[in-house]
Image (spheres, rainbow, N blue to C red):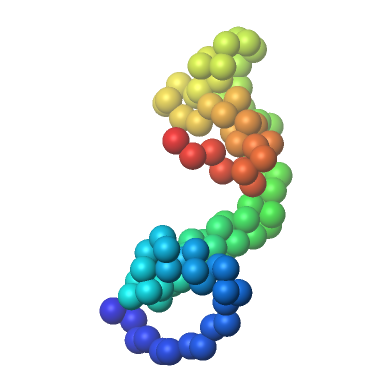
Length: 100
């Protein structure tokens, strides 16, 4: 387990009460740590997406392209990524992430 430190964090009253109602006072720290980790992962992932935007293209991976209009035909012979899915993910309102 990583080393731990106490930190004084100020919350608006209504937010703190909402957390307490959801997880209880004794689970505040666990909840805040978990939420913070989730947010850090999301921010780092979005940063990587911004830095690598445009790095993948059909021109660089012609093995994934076909003239067949059916989306399933867009998969490469090895059963790889669907181009249609990649484009949909890139344009998705959830920041490029589609959850199952």
